[in-house]
Length: 283
Image (cartoon, rainbow, N blue to C red; front, top):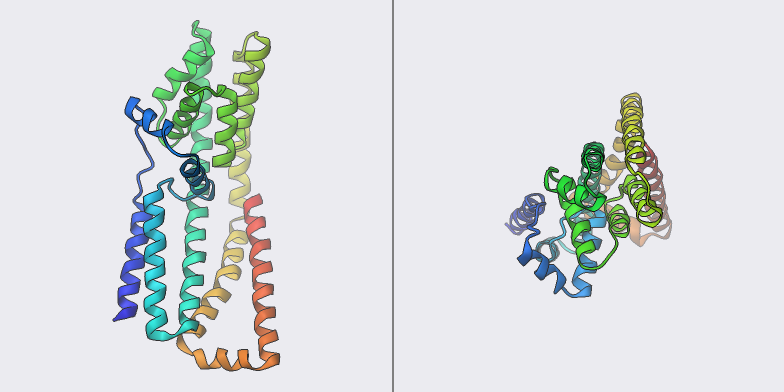
């Protein structure tokens, strides 16, 4: 019964995490609320966004509380080995979900960015200033890029330069192409001149990189599946053994040779998972 309650609590926390709204209002009231936020809360929100979690502090606190209660229930009913296994599974699961969400959002941003830059370029051609063109283009951009650009515009309205704000959002979202856009705008603000040619070349570069990435993604499908299986299956087997047959692992832990084997296996599994993760990140 306690295991069922813990499972239901974790499922509810995960559903809340997945159902978190990405879009937040950026009206006058929202700008005032964000401007009055404490420095620590802003840093926590940015940290959550960096790892791929929704930037909602209450939701993050609820997830932690649900995880702690679930681990406590399992600790009381099954003992500390099962509780440690559940805690490890929660941490790994949240990190995997966060990375998947972050990568999916990054791909969506890269797909939307050329269209946004093209809109800015066309508005500058017809006589708008760069700042006004960016503001109009942001209003017509869809989520999730609109949310990122709205945060950048909010920082510029609060006193930061727009290129610096775009650099900041590039660090948060992991979209390095925002650095290129920020560099173009920074050069334009400092030295003047026409910015449309640079923006058009940036759009072409983004389209070329997107085509190359799709070709590489198609060629490495089998490699990615193999890497995922090699990384996940040993962890799942270890968690199953920890829950189903605790005495076997406890006997190994009490034996000096078995303890060395367990620690060595964990170290090698961690090293292999890190190498596979870096390989997948590079594709």
